[in-house]
Image (cartoon, rainbow, N blue to C red; front, top):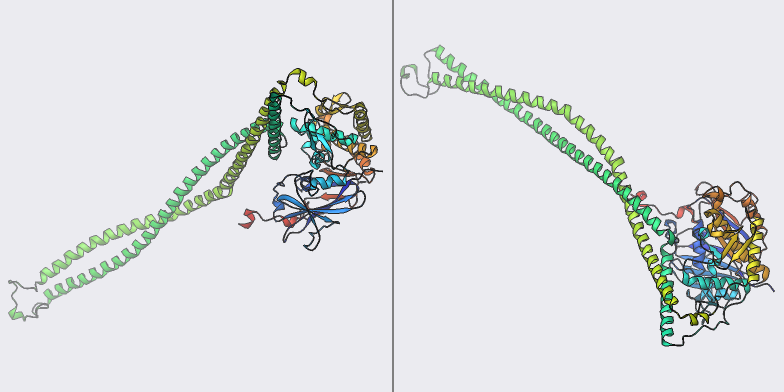
Length: 628
């Protein structure tokens, strides 16, 4: 009787006032392909998250506003379930049947914890393992033969291969930590043989020294596990952290130089703009002052004219009085006979006339000075009329240069510098964790090497894969590679030391990035095929992100498969797999024209053509620039 298993049916994100973001899957081959930055790899991450992966989900702008995720599952026997989880993580709700929309409160559900616990059935791991008849299994934890309860997370890394993992140089069974390598290999062995490590009885410490050493080893193993989990949250490529930090430092140095130059240009232009504004304001103020002065001087000139006319009238009247001779005094009214010209009298006409003439001379002097001042002000006003438009024109051009070019460039550089600085801090933190792991591993190795030789000889074997199983698995992978027309697909065998494939005499990890991706895919597909053929337990589905990288980003001529028919053969083989196996492919490049149907989804990144991406285009919230 075939072993039971699972297949994925749908993944859906929901949120208040948000259009549902979903994708459906069926038995056999499923393909999601299209442009970059459309959410394809996010689907892989979300499925892993819904199968017990730790939060948080990647922070995408399109994800804002969604608060729950639904994952539809179906057993090979036809039972259907839906898992509900908050996008922030935590436990699960389990519903019977497939629900693309969140079920109401009246629909019966069962709560499942997110942490594995072999003593309780009410957690996701135990539920999933039970559907695959893998519950109650145990896998080796260390060389001393200690075992742990099998968790679905032990199996998940053999089912879900991310774009980062698929190109790694290390074995597909390793996630980079020596503590996890043992249970990873034990899980692989369990799937191939169907036999777990329940029969193992670990060596117990006989002396206080052994107990102390074992306690220290366990503590270091626990610390390594915690640090490895932290490192996974920080980076997928710990071996590249040094290079990343060097590149970041180089970029920061370049940005610092560019930022300093741009800030200097901005300060210089800003100072010049400030000077021009000051000159323009002073010029406009002076022009306004000149206009006011000219108005006041015009009024003063009219007063001078009025005074001169009045004084000329006095002068003419006095002269006329002298000419007329005998007549009453115009000032005191005395008759000619009573006038005393040689005495003191306010009616001294000659003095009055002389005073008027003297006053006229003073006013004429003032009028000349006023005329010269007015002429000078007019000349200054004409100069301002010529100079101010030039200042305004230069100020406008300078402001446009600052506002349209220098300021945006400076803002971009500052933002970019801040992002690089944050990234450097992130890498430094990851590098610190990585170096801590290396230090703990070195300490652990020294502690382990201090075990007396006679005690090491009695240690339990590391549980290598039986030779017949290893050869059979390698032949399965070789057959797959030949069906895919992989170059030099002869003589594939499983190397017990590296726990990886040797293909045509060359280690799999020693090949280029693109060939590592396709051979990692063959390893994962081969494991699925082997388990189904040999009727050993396997959940029955796999997810591969970017297996055909050699078509898209070859590292060299040896890594370039674009001139071969491997892509067509790859898809033909997966298309013809039995329905008890589900394969989900995430790719950038288009599949062959023969690969079409409802289980093939294309993301166009074009709002006017086809499906934009996993999240609807309308769900993208406006940016700060759009709001402003």
